[in-house]
Length: 245
Image (cartoon, rainbow, N blue to C red; front, side):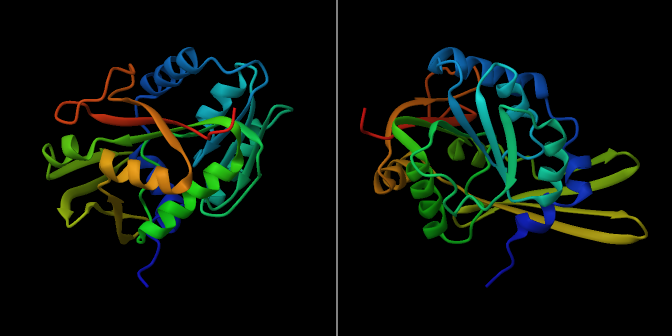
């Protein structure tokens, strides 16, 4: 079995250096747009699934919701725990495994934090765990890239120098996956990491969500929540519901 690449890479300090200049204001704007759309009740229980260092969990908790953040990276959760308070808690957890049953009003999976597993069975296992964690009528939002859009716009090779480290990045597609290789020298040695994400289409998600017992009710194509267009939308944002209310 090939190693699970995300375990070492997401726990590496170099991962956080490479991505330190992501547009956080755009991300928080997306979350605010989402909350305006969904209108969670005060104190609603929200799970931030694959929460990283907890920035967006903190943003949600600041709006008065009861927020739990889960991530596989021990280093990220260790960092996030400094922000814990009465309505915000963090746990190291594998999203494929059950956490709490019939508990959350909303589960969010932001910024392409899905499709990392080598087997689609694990992706389905994750979605079934999501379904089991929702209360009847609960809502799951998955934010993924639009595979058709990304496949037609690969940048190929690029270099980024951040904190004195030159990252050499290459993107390519093999079969049903997009690969990003990252190589650089730091700390007196050469490093190489590889990201691998499955190119799920809307049809793939419809099949998987149906098998997990989740009903997709809306699709959006960007962080302004405009309608999804397969040819032109950069994102594929799915709003699904667990039947029962």
